[in-house]
Amino acid sequence: MTVETPGGSASDTLRPEVQRIIAAGRSGVVRSEGLQRSVWLLGLLSALLLWSAFTPLELSAAAWLALVPLCLLLRLRSLPRRTFLVLWCCGLFWGTATLQWMRLGHPAMYAAMFALAAWIGLTFPAFVLLGRRVTAAGLPVWLAVPVVWTVLEYARGMLLTGFAWYFLGHSQYRWIGLIQIADVTGAWGVSFVVALFSGVLVLYVPDSLLRRLGLDVAPGFDSGRFRVLVPTATAVTVLCACLVYGAIRAERPSAFPPGPVVSLIQGNFTPELKHDAQLVLSRFRIHNVLMQSSIRLQPDLVVWPETMFPWPERSVAEGVTDQQILAQAPLDVLRDYGNESALLVEPFRNAEVQKSLAGHSQGLGAALMIGLEALVADHNRTRVFNSAAFVRPDVGYVGRYDKIHRVVFGEYIPLKDLLPWLSELTPFGAGFGIDAGADVRLFEYGGWRMSPLICFEDTVPGLVRRMAAQRDAAGGTCDLLVNLTNDGWFRGSSELDQHLITAAFRCVENRVPMVRSVNGGISAFIDGDGRIRDPGVIQVLQEPLEGTRPQLTDVQGLRDPATGTWRRQFSGIIHGQVPLDPRTAVYTTWGDWLPQFCLLVTLLLALKKGLRH
Image 1 (spheres, rainbow, N blue to C red):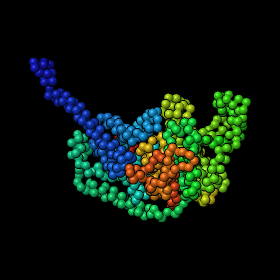
Image 2: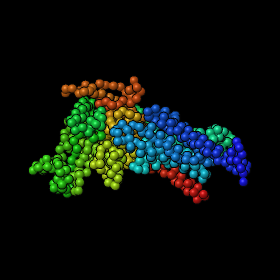
Image 3: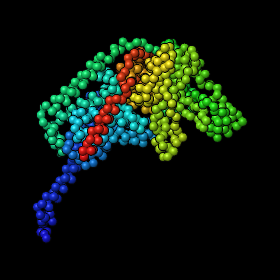
């Protein structure tokens, strides 16, 4: 037994081996805290680089470096405590900074913004976890990085209805030569190439730097220059092959065959105005004036943005009786109508809106694709759709497309009957929601076949591929994608730019051009190479509208020379001729073969590692 001496401590009298154990424990705590700070540093650096690669900064070069800090964690023998929690926090930071535009729609959207940011933030810990598993199973780090990152982008684009935004490849949209590989691999292939360079660059970071950060480096990475020669040569060869392919596949802007002449009508209404019944007529007047003003431009097609026609198209499902229609009307409405309740049935039976749209089309001498709400009286309830109606001047009303891909919390609330509190995540309340459409549509006019896409559907790779692959009775495929969107929710923020950029990749993937009519902007023409082209005419309406003769001012170029940014938040006409694209695309036929192959490789290697363990 030992006794503490005056002026000393109990540890002074302990045996030497016990003192060493205590000292090692104390130093381990300090070292663990230091290691966590290093993980924070690496995770936040990747988050900052990823954020800067996209709008609003658009520093595309940052994307080639963005994964390097995270990749360094794949070189460690062991990870510090709570590494994955720290990485998720860093991913949450990236997601919140990137998605900050979501909050602009409504205060209730803060909750949805943080929920989505938390979801995409899981990319960071998942990348390190899966990356370490597949490298432990034998895949080189420089190859594991693009394989695993592609898998995670694929998961983000598919799970929970999908969010195919902010892929690494999207940051390279201005490099037209590089992004042409998307017609073989989808946007995933561009991300793969960018991530490949991060995987190679991480090999150039010396072990000494990691040790200086206190990290436990695995042996074998500082084995000489030859270690990086093969990966570097491979990455450079892949990039050069992509650029050669792009040079062969890309068309000169003037080489595309001329297609239909299109006038895109762009209003500039905030969401509050859109849902204010007292201003419905004002909104219609602006759009109608712009549509009538487009007559002198002699368009083949005029497009209104999403839901900008204020009166819903009503119709009745087959076999539904008048009594069933009345049974679906709210009680207070039935009381107001009293003995004249039959008037509630009439709008569903007489197709007033369809006839009105046909009259507009005939007056224009052009086809009309217009965003509106559709109400269909079914046997048990009235179904509500976010729709695009198509009308021709020669035959009248042709039909409508009902939006298939709904926005979570923006257009429907999952599990709202089971979890009523989820309604608090949307600004619309518990009774809000629209039904999903059944199928894609292909409309024809003037020998051109066109398919509508509504809202964020132009960012969904699988849906756009379905649109491009569909055939009409004569075997013809889609010549033109028509996007009807309301981005007024986001008040001129970076969302407008990123939405447009993401849509451009759908054009490359399927070699189909697109026109976009967007409330609040950015309305645009995109060719099959993914170029966002200057339209022939941009006319800005001088507001407020006074009298019967609108004042329209011509401006040059889709980008404002004063700011260098795309023009937005104005009411006007964007007019031009669509550049058709006769080419076909491997991606349209084979779809997501690249991320699925990467997923198979990842699963097999992770399983191999698990069985070995």
